[in-house]
Amino acid sequence: MTDRPALLIMQRHLAPLTAFLESEWTVYRFWEGPPVEAQAEIRALVVAGEFPLDKHLIEILPKLQLIACFTSGYDGIDIDWCRARGLPVSHAPGVNHEDVADHALGLILAARRQIAAGDRALRAGGWTADSKLITPSLKGQRLGVVGLGSIGEAVARRGEAMRMAVRWWGPREKEAPWPRAASLLELARDSDILVVACKADESNRGLVSRAVIEALGPHGLLVNVARGQLVDEAELIAALRDGRLGQAALDVFEDEPTDPARWTDVPNTVLTPHTGGATTEAVQGMLMLLIENLRAAFSGQPLKTPVP
Image (cartoon, rainbow, N blue to C red; front, side):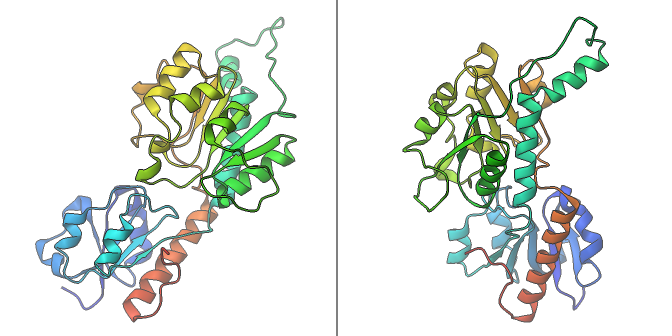
């Protein structure tokens, strides 16, 4: 037992945070099975926002006063449920959206210009004197952006700089330098490349449905840097296999880590392991906001970046 506030880190991949937090607080790790006596001392949960919140655990922690979300997104957290219990939630907004947009552009380039495929072909001896890989230019490609938040806007700016024609769709109108499509289906139908960059919640699970995938079509490229559950993954895989969709470049998946066997025979894909926002600078920024929010909560001050 200690007089220092106790934290419980929930996800194993957040374990490296321990070294930065234990100088000020007592740190427990959920996967190690913290001692029963720690139950009465835990004052904050440190979580990755894409994972479902363990409500039963919260209900047996009498001193819990903060859900400290290390990430910007918090779609796994039932904010209304927490609010009804007077339990604040903090997160890390405005830290990595430019990095995620960079990654989206990298996925577009890797897929459209066949960069990953070219690398594999060269290493396998497929580059011969009489062979030449011909790929389309990005100039004039029609880029559709789903969700014009901070990530979506950053993707749109990059697309414009790459000489693409940009349109977007979101459920709410907003001022923007690019035209808004009347519907997601219309945006998909009028796009060569569709980038999913919107927030995820239960209301938009499977937003990119079979109809949207087929509207994008056999020459279209679907890019997802938001959340895996926004795309009907089974329909996506089926469409890639039978040619109803041209390409997919994904950084996020329905279940993470995704099963590599699921993608073994799926053609025309570029896949990365949810690293879009995981730059050194972004992680440092998220860590600083996490520490500031923890300090504020334990000293009775307003949170630095509360979830609105």
